[in-house]
Image (cartoon, rainbow, N blue to C red; front, side, top):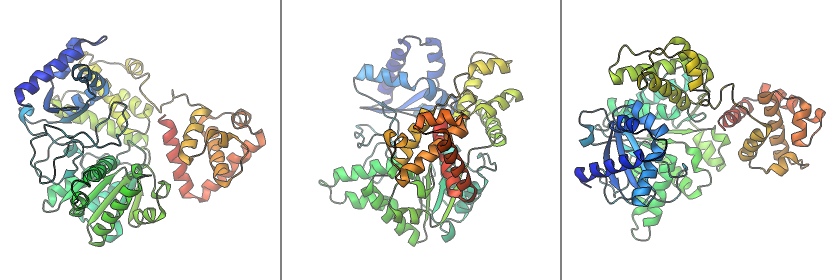
Length: 495
């Protein structure tokens, strides 16, 4: 689609959005004028934004309306990707590929290969044509966009992430050293794992441009493999091309490997690539939302994933979250050229104290406050006004009302047992273990009387008390249990 038709299509989309109920056309004009269409084909639209603030705000508040407008106009569901391009005349510049698979209409990763685009971004590739959301990030000195801003320099360091940060720097400076190959970084969503992987990639791209680096999210990797599978009957070289693409990397970074659970064929291929690279002294970096032992994969994979350096990122303490708030405000100040812009200290501290461990939620809260100050011209926004503004924003703050049912549901999903077994009479070791963990977390997170907890598990007061005491005793000498419980707490807080 040429530029003129692309602009016409985008204007039609904007007008469609403005026609919806509860939409303020003046806000659409203000925000959407900072977006520029880059590529469009059946079921796919790529836009670039002037800065990260605009990108974040559109994604939080208007992406659903854009997708709805596209569906209403073209009668097919659309994937929409927004990237940051701060170069002058960005509407005509070459955008960066997307950093992760674009969300589908139900916000879950698709397990089907994406429909090939009839029009693709004007970027030279040697491999068979693939959609931007499927293409891994290959070392490219000209790569621009949001991912290039994820560096070691702007990663906020605290006690919760210091070790993982230090090891990531060590790998970036000297990739391939045996004691850190693979490097495995784990921690709950939103704590900064992807930032560290991208920082490694960006550092190597800048300091060792002769090395080939590939970053790929596991969902992209799975899509890549499925595409090769679909093409196998027609093109016998498809599997070879799939493997070669990754085996040629000097540094391979795979994000969110827990998503490969249950994907045996893909795991087998990844394992072969993994072994080939590490045996040749080439660097592999992996991330997941849990420790290798807690990923439901074959024991040999766990052993190999854990054979180098394994480091966790814990939820950030208040000081680290406050540092992130200040860093994000500074980023906005620089991107907008507004050196006088500020957010009062008491408001910054309130955001840091009230937010959950998820850094994305933290940044979203700051973005909301920035929007209120700038676009509604409220430079003297008070703390009480911010409390009202963010009243329903935080998922893990003090206002979060958890229930025993919430905790039971997460325990059942994590340990793969039924609700009937959790509250029933079965005494199998795995069921008893999960039941005691659930009871302990109910007591710790909800601070309810033993008897009230017991009623929801069909147990008496003394059984609940024993379960809590038993878990507390085991925690004293079992670091893995403490990590497991922290993982569960984060899952529960983010319900």
